Image (cartoon, rainbow, N blue to C red; front, side, top):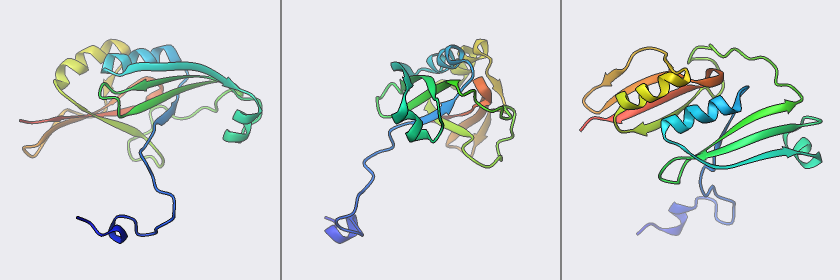
Length: 158
């Protein structure tokens, strides 16, 4: 059994309980939602958010946005898709390469990568590079989805 000092190096301080979600700003909420449903995520909820509390939270005046919260089938991971109506989102580079600074991809562990790729192609998914075999442990790929989002898939080789 671990000593309490080893588990909590700074007793009395706040600790992370879990990662709740990752938010991605998109220009077409319906297309992005359909893409991630095609991947296998489930819609958990939808809302429109606005008002002074939202403005103060994000540091932008006059925010009105729609959000869709999606969850992984195991219920542990969540993805929040956000479309800003006001103020309009500044243009980004949806084709930015994978080594661009900042958050640039989200990875999912999957079974039957080929089936998933077939399901996502009608939603605009394109491979960034190739499906590769990493040693004798994984098949991996990066694909680009709506709003230029890079989604990585990892299929464990059994």
